[in-house]
Image 1 (cartoon, rainbow, N blue to C red):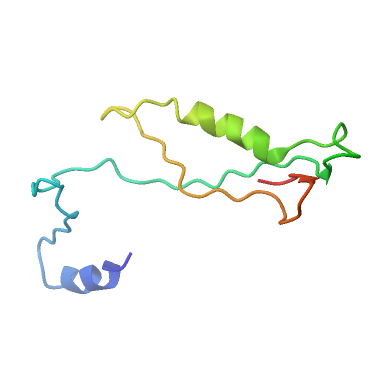
Image 2: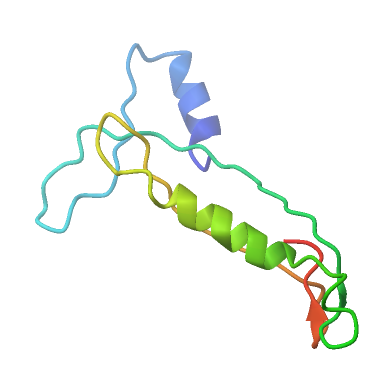
Length: 102
């Protein structure tokens, strides 16, 4: 994203423009990559007091963790995508409350 405007300007006067990844640890050049996709996964549960209303509550964070563990089973080979969890937010910042959203 940081170079988009510069590359667009170059596109008016340049036939080819190359953008490189940082070198690998051994100094070799990265010559290909899989690409990126970002997904927002939202799980809704039912919040409630962890002691008094536990049986009526549905923990969204727990359910999301189960789903993410299944996604991590996708193998990381060149013919299939790899999955990486980058960020996770859950709950409402309250203690002793079952998480209703993750």
